[in-house]
Image 1 (cartoon, protein in one colour):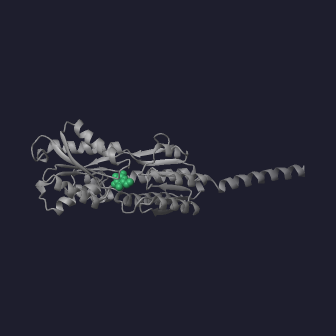
Image 2 (spheres, helix red, strand yellow):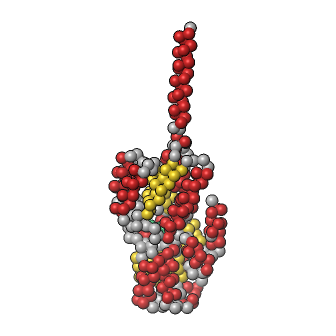
Image 3 (spheres, rainbow, N blue to C red):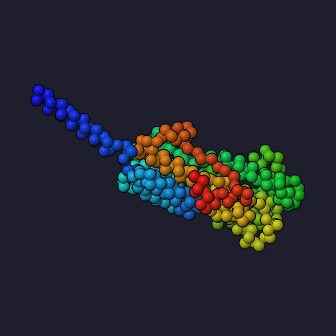
Amino acid sequence: MRKKRILTWGLAIGICLILGACGGSGASDQKVYVGVTYYDQSDTFLSQLIPCFREQMDRLGDDGLDIAMTVREASGSQQTQDDQVRELINAGCNVLCVNLVDRTDPSEIIELAREKDVPIIFFNREPVTEDMQRWEELYYVGADARQSGVMQGELAAEMIRKNTRIDRNRDGRIQYVVLEGEPGHQDAIIRTENAVNTLKKNGIELEKLSYGIANWNRAQAQNRMMQMISQHPGKIELVLANNDDMALGALDAYLKLNFTETALPVFFGIDGTDVGLEAVRDGGLAGTVYNDKEGQAAAMAKLAAALVTGEGKEDISFKNKRYIYLPYSKVTSDNVDSYMGDTVKEKR
Ligand code: BGC
């Protein structure tokens, strides 16, 4: 009898210990330690996306998750970024968010992470499909480049139809130039192609005068634009830029050359960065397309937490199982206020 009781107690204590141990290291109690590395701190869009991501991670912390985060920037060197990933993994990060320097060269990073079983969320600079297939713990958060190009084209078409003065030489065609982002970036060529095709589909006759590659950068765009203005003096009626910084660089060139307002072309950007939105509000840019950094940051934070804790992944809607694309939206002087400052945050 006594023996039986001891056995029962022993069994009960054993079960408690096992349950206790499981409870102690329960998935949702696990610390989420995110290692972030992004391609270059001089990039305006990234310099606003990263703080948004921090804010989203802090919110998860406020909701009771144990959160830690380390951020590195790679100053445009893939080698530096590979080293940073090694360092972040050694420091104990259990999920990585990587904005690749070279979107075609993630192999070293993927190997390092796979070896230690640390999932990677790539963001903003999309790896090619073959690389994304190297391991099932690779994810991507970004936006659909095609959509941003279409929206930019629609904005421009609408403005040209409404405002006949844009066709300054009244030849029934719009003389335009394009400022392009980094060659090889998924957002550069696709944005241009779709903006131009959308304008044509909307019945706008176009004449391409020139284009310049300005690598997303305002100062480079100003230089390229100065050259294009001198090659086609007084002729350019429309500037399509792959991002706001380059649209603003183009405007800088005209202001530097003291063009009067009536002699300016119309400028369109993409991103809705703080400076971009201000320029839309003040009339410098005719419009932009909002690249939803708050939405992207929220999706990254949610996914990072889900990958570590094992909870909440079923609430996330993926495209092709491992991709999350946030929609773009059109911004003009009519709705720009709702995108600015606190209003943007309140929208979420
Ligand atoms: C943004 C650019 C940015 C680039 C960096 C693009 O999606 O529109 O402004 O420079 O990403 O990768």
